[in-house]
Image (tube, helix red, strand yellow):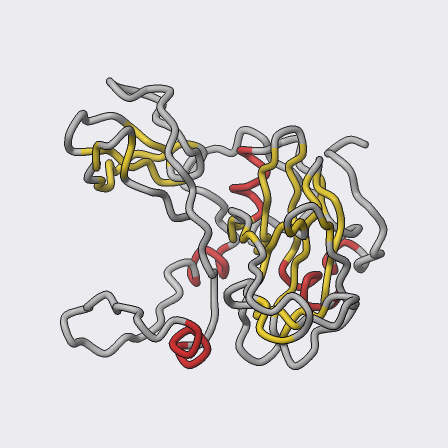
Length: 251
């Protein structure tokens, strides 16, 4: 999750509190010492309690080459000149089957706890998309609440795109398969998956709005959003994906 640090013209500085809420990190700000759960867009304790943070759209994953081509002015966060070595800090938990450092309030068996989901919190409609189902479906387009959305993952780069399908007064429809890892609408316009920008066709130069999706473990998302629906049916570990709609828990 990425949030803007500016609130009402004031820029806050955040740190890690060392506390957890439903097994997810809680931030604090140095200016007021208020507490901000990373899975929520507002402070829950302190002077800023109830104040909301603006969630910023973010490209969850892509290659440096694709990103640099689309954004040549990009600055890179320094890591002190050290070589970056990917580390899966959850490997032991996966192996041990240990879920969470604290008890889970809303345990939901519809998916394995460590399954990755791309999730949307739209007023009145929480929705989770298991990552393997996004890949299997190529291009997903549906309405989540009142918002028409489109999701896709590029096979080679892993770029994830989650966009609002509305452009001006039009709601776009996209072809069921990516065209060279780009979205293609029914008018023949090609849209970059990494940026949402139309690069070729009748709508060249127009922009899709990126939605504030979250790439999280299922047990975290379900604990915060117990009424969430899931794209598709049961997981592979529970008899295979049916591709049928699966509503809130208990339905």
